[in-house]
Length: 204
Length: 193
Image 1 (cartoon, helix red, strand yellow):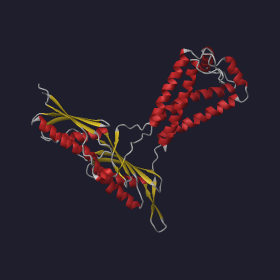
Image 2: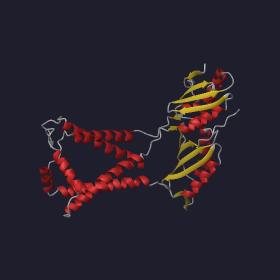
Image 3: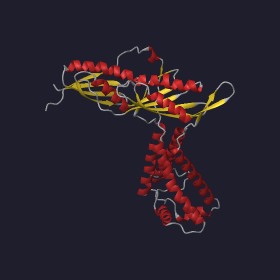
Image 4: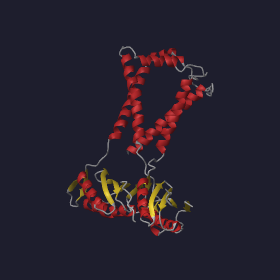
């Protein structure tokens, strides 16, 4: 009877408060995608730079470098269905798909957008780790709770509490109420579902 | 701006790689119809034979075109790379004094004032404020570290109604849009016993 789980659907208040009804559907935060941009730009420079240098050097009647002669020989000796060609093409498609996905998805999955009212010109978001810390502090304020672990997902907040005294069911009910308030106080644009598990500490 | 540029260029690069890869695979598997003007028709054709290369090279236009295209590509890549390190920060904000005299507020001063005011608010441990945008239409980027026991929604409301509103009024701006991101310094749990 150590572990008992209480699943709890998101707050069933069908008629949300008026301010929420007028809230903008807050958009996700979009990443600038600096890292992939740096990688692609650097890769272009690293391959294109020496190639351009060598082309110009050969035009100026200097001998071509070894790697370029190897490349020309390779292109001459390999057929289109050579394993290297096929591998290269497959790799190009894979990298290309990754870049397209990076270009069209928002990223920044660690930041949850917060509610925003129509007239405000302030956009705000909170990191999921901060959500975890805020809710942990709330849960620890419930008497009987000794330790709490909060996992804040993008759609669901999972709370694991360890309670060393008071009836588990009472503690769980308290936790449910306190955490539901806590999630509401976060002011997230889409309120995550809440799952609360309370259990006794393992016997030594 | 940088975000849009990065995403468009990444999308183009991705599509280019997918197109080239698909074309190569289709050729290798012999899926290209014979009627198409395509240099490879049997899957055991070599990628680029010495004879073809020499033939290409002897066209007068070949090398100049290659060199020009490659240079252009490299200049673009270099610009793109350098653009990533640039942090657009506003140096000053134009204040409309209403009597025809233009006044200017140093951006750094405004940022510091906002930071100090934000950090004095309840629930906010530390703040970092950056002014971006244009001199006449500045925007704020705010990073907050929440204090223990903070209520994030209230922290945002306080920041908006006190610090940002003060800055907006003192510079006489019609609007001062802001983007706020909140983090939490992982502090030790404080248990109520």
